[in-house]
Length: 354
Ligand SMILES: [Zn+2]
Ligand SMILES: [Zn+2]
Image (tube, rainbow, N blue to C red; front, side):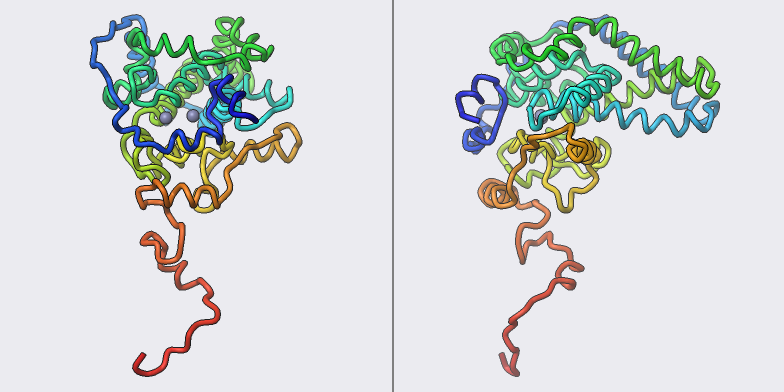
């Protein structure tokens, strides 16, 4: 892929790495202007959180065992819809998918309901290009609450709108399935995200309407939203910066598990074209990567882009904050057991007095 194509799509690829290797702390800003509140969204989100809390109560008091077990599975697949679909496939083009996998990911993305892939990818590309400026839709310079949910409760900053219009989405516009989802989103989303998880449990295992609606529709959606929002908020504030200490995104151990692979946010902002969104090795709890690997094995996912260990090592040495788990012998984070278990050959003989 040439640099020209990269610029044309607005997607960050390997060629952008050197551009990212700059001190961007000077560029972070917010003009702090008051943004106009959108009361409809505020009331809606307040109600969803309130009824989801009731869903938690129902999950532990009234839900059938099948619902209790189906709940975490449905949350996991909602997350994959965003992390594997909207994020890694469509926003970053980190791999290619055959039509059946595209359909699965678009279905799961609609099940997760965070707007159509087209708009999600547009906002996310702008987030990567203009991280921590007023053009970043979830600018964490405005604080944790804004980058978590606040940005959805106000009218967009004019810079977000302007940069959103500039970013090239031609690849998505040419994708007939993406445009189909965009066109019929207001029909597909209520059916797949709310009606289906309410009705199916009632017919398949006799769950009550009250539990189905509050647990598998509302609570599942609400939990999935918050887990993914944590990447925009917490993963831009708290945690380690093993790959680039000058940028705000962090690697958070808590999120690595919770968001099934999308918590390695420092790595992801440095190498956004990596389909794993992380290094492998000690980072092994990534459900999304395993999901993609499974479909690669089936032949439905292909052209998986990644970063060589040597490239990672060079970047860590150049711009990391020293918290990279292990990148060499003598690293302060090297585990004692690893030191003990390691084999050292050709050792110098220690003689008395040496
Ligand atoms: Zn991203
Ligand atoms: Zn980010």
